[in-house]
Length: 82
Image 1 (spheres, one colour):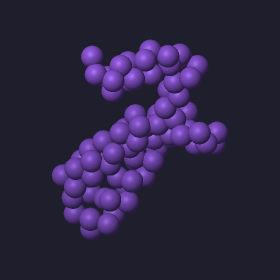
Image 2: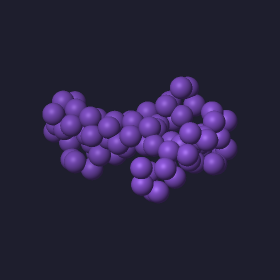
Image 3: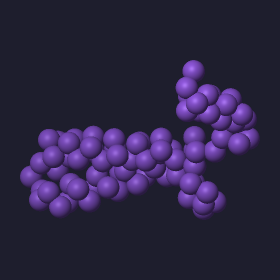
């Protein structure tokens, strides 16, 4: 076993549940990588859905604005309700 892999093994085995915190340390808006992924996926899905569906005749600016509002709502729900 190389020195580097031994160090990684010992570091990961010493992390306990109360020491493993993946959120940004901001108490008002503690966003994590999973929350960010939910927001990015929602932007992609909502913009595709709006362009092909309900906002097909509107300018792209309108559908992008609605997609970002949906992504913001998804992140807020993901952060505070899950």
